[in-house]
Image (cartoon, rainbow, N blue to C red):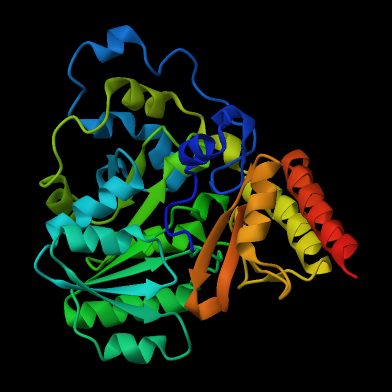
Length: 353
């Protein structure tokens, strides 16, 4: 079973002898909609010559308005994964709870910082398990990975309250929040600004659909952000990235969650019509499905790769074994995937005696 990250298109290209440009990557969950980006900033030589500005707050105005958070309560860094590792480094020596299913890098960051991590399944007994465990950090993801479930505000409040009683801090990973439908993006940040026990993580990388453009944010109280900043090296973001952030137009994403909902609905309906069972209640720009019992995941994987389509297969104890996780892309690209799966299913029918 594959355990690497989604989006490893370079490995897939080497394995198949294809160019990465030839592969349609459904394993990488980034925004596939049109994005207007500030032109002629990234890679500009005059911005790359001097050391970057250390006062990153000067470049957060547009994002501050978009997120509804004062610039002083935002810490940018070269990707949310980077910031997760630095968060753990700032809290080394404590214990952690990771609510599963989750992003694999929570465990990796804990291990790198010498933090003992206990995994707890997100199930009806979750709160009882959390209350009965000693920890200094708890990791949550909303929408979750790999199924895209969300944590409702009342549950988040309960978890933060429990953490507060233990003197612990909640790390809420909202990497996909900007892409999620029916999700209250304002609630979590307001809770974080009013609490010393909650940090919210967001991803610009996923929002703008440029996975190699590494930028993420932590949102929370200034004292906690400073604690994390103290373990970050200087100049973690290039000056061209800072100028890009300053000039970016975030207002273009006002309809994005609804657009993705429509694209996702079409994909979900196709999967269910063909006996693929959708796991959870997906709200973000990806879905995970259980395969029909007669389909072997590695056979389907190979068939799709022969058609230059890369998907992701994961093991989920809480959602019934092997899942196929696919990114929700534009209707044109989704049609390519659906046509390939339909071809695979017809091939299976043709092989029957």
